[in-house]
Image (cartoon, rainbow, N blue to C red; front, side):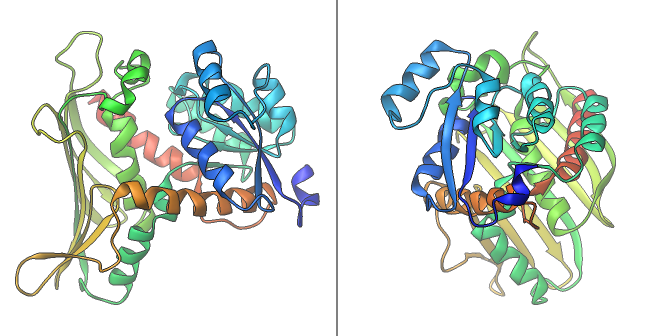
Length: 328
């Protein structure tokens, strides 16, 4: 694997998929130290997407196909729709490259399990909470004993409509039951967070409702465990005016902490109010910081070094729970 010989070299990243996620990571790469990572090329099967890349990122090579991206990269970032994740990931691994993939790993859990067994430690999944400053703050609060003994986790998400406005171009798959829906797209992040901070996910019971034929879910309710802690999940479309509402809360016997709207760490004060961390940032400002740290992890992944990114096993555990909710 070339990765073993790049200890002091910049890591070449190739991108498959020029949607919003591919564009976000490409922007982060271009803002990162080129001595750490460099964008070696991007490809998307949609001509309109490639034209947008030519206009927005003229300095980035637009390659002929996925194979060309893989050949140009040390690590291949897969940001295409979920049904194509594993074919691209398997091709990259077969070429001796590492893989950084969007979630979910696959649209079939059994196929995802097989892939994780094949891939070993040569891949990671883009759950940005692995590098979130707000999550680091919450971890410090927990470890300092501010909440006492952890007792339970509650996850709440809501959307005025689905997909969210900035994802409207992806509605063709993002609002379909096979690949899309807010449970896969959003709830998965908070399941990963629960696993990362508390423990493996298991013991799920729940259900999802699909009131619109051919569309993704509009409501979910579920309970499970993270390690030894009970977790409850509630999610709905059309019950809030906010485009994107989310709260992850961990309660203990002495207090509570929560993450709001992706990036605001808060703790429950003695006066009964929620107080944000002094350095809390809105998501628009926090996201670039997290992606910068994610890229530092990608460089370590490509070099075969320990990294903080979500592992393939993490992503599989999350996907197993997500699919169980949707099948309930």
